[in-house]
Image 1 (tube, one colour):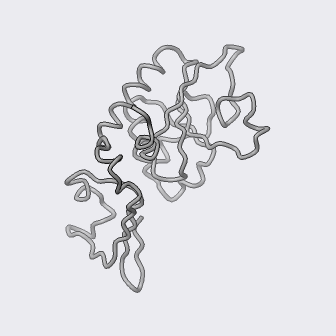
Image 2 (cartoon, rainbow, N blue to C red):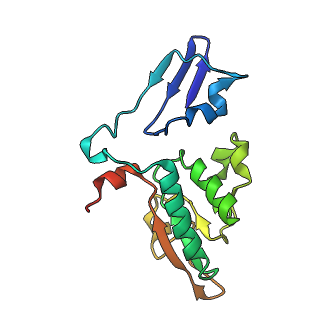
Length: 178
């Protein structure tokens, strides 16, 4: 997140990692042809731990997810993917790339939170009848019970859905057992 105000510009990195050269391609960090002056950087060190010594690059993660989603959704229209996203933001890169590469929009039940991100709007949908879901888990257990997709979609035309869940999470990656 980039905060710009009267007292300067602050970059909050979150737990995001950048590969060498990626910052040069981020338009929001530039003003015209030059990099913006950033007075402060808040660097999240959540993953400054030996168990996170090797974290696959963003591209490696995307390619692995693309391969899995492509092979799964090509089996039938009843083969559905749920992206189990724990945070509200930070998955836009994944949504855009899945949509562009596979031609499938990503269902979200919180589309209004993206209204100020016009570049993602053509890649998400509120239509539950899509094969890729990133709908958020309702906190009411009664809404979720019996449904494997948080939006409540369970089957189409009486045909049961075949659902896989992908958890795009660095925290999960570091805590997994080999």
